[in-house]
Length: 382
Figure 1 (cartoon, rainbow, N blue to C red):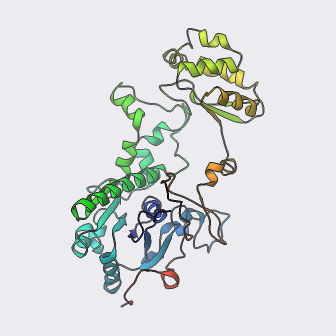
Figure 2: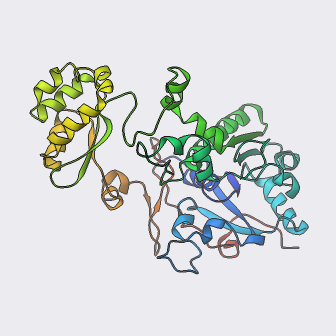
Figure 3: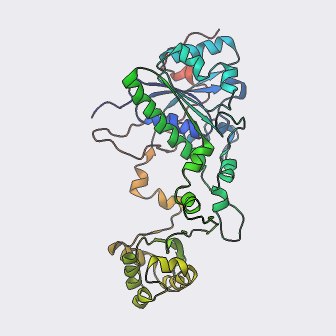
């Protein structure tokens, strides 16, 4: 097996919540040494306090914090203290990557902005997450950006209220953008020897992900509306139907050939020849009739038998799973991180490199655990 791609790389994480820490764990999974710099003035990452009502009040590594903090060590520093700031600067001399998530202007006030740290280490690659870019001073919050980027307006049932998605998807999308930017900057550094500043905002990461909903508006001039689970351009796609057992399936019929196969399985071959349903364009025009007919037919089906028939004929479809059902799947099991005496974690990396096995990581660190485990040389506290 080859060495991890980022072995001997040092990443300093000056970020909190989900987006920045997700990037930190990404580098840890690729072999980097990741040191999470936590704010001693606020007792660390705020997600240490985001606990479910079923979790102990004194839990230091609650479930939310564990979503993005495997493979790290924690160092608590008060960066307004000159001596502790110098400790950070000592680490910066050794570092390859900084991940930060300060509001515009805050990094400069703390003297941890790119220009300051570049003067200490010109090869430094500095990734900075903001809510709205360098010219808007507001902090970025996933739910607010979901609303302002249009995602919340588009999500929900027709006639219902805009609905927040159940995952902090704006943070996740921003993390992916920053990972890509940092990898490009590291490649550039290999060629030039120089560091780089990589900036990404939650809002622009969100807007870039509007994809076909954006082009439906920009190209076709049609303003997207809430459609529940329906797809504006394809029918039936994303549609959810209930089988006779009371469990749901989703269909993702992408072309007319697949629709004809669906009709054969349902014993409704004539439906595929109906001019209202014969091709996708017609089905989009007659969405309500398609769905009503399919609901009636699928309500007579046993879910497992129905899905087996669909899969045999390569009709895109699947069961609507609960999370226990998800993590019973072998593919999901491969995404888990394990360590002794702790609950499993979730990997950030879903790709595999030939010749490299996924690394096992240490579990999320207790606040300021550097006294126990820190493997990066530090000067003494001043």
